[in-house]
Length: 94
Image: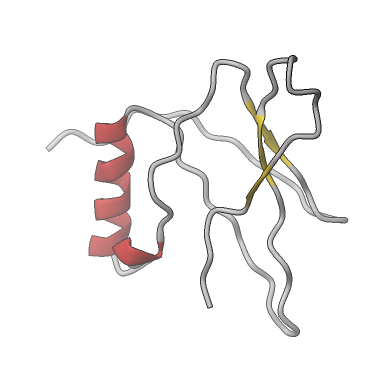
């Protein structure tokens, strides 16, 4: 069963503006999942999803619905031993 994204309350008091928390999904035995996060304009994100589908890397239906990033930001909770790399690029034109 695929249930993306994993969004949980951030734990901050209600009167305080709090970031959106994306929690780590539960691991299945023998799996080493890789979380993909696309941040950009709705058009750029949709274009990236389409390109990943065309090269048969990721089916379009597997992506979550659009999540609006609040002005307070976004928190990604890591699992023990996870690392992150970050790339900013201009998508190819055409």
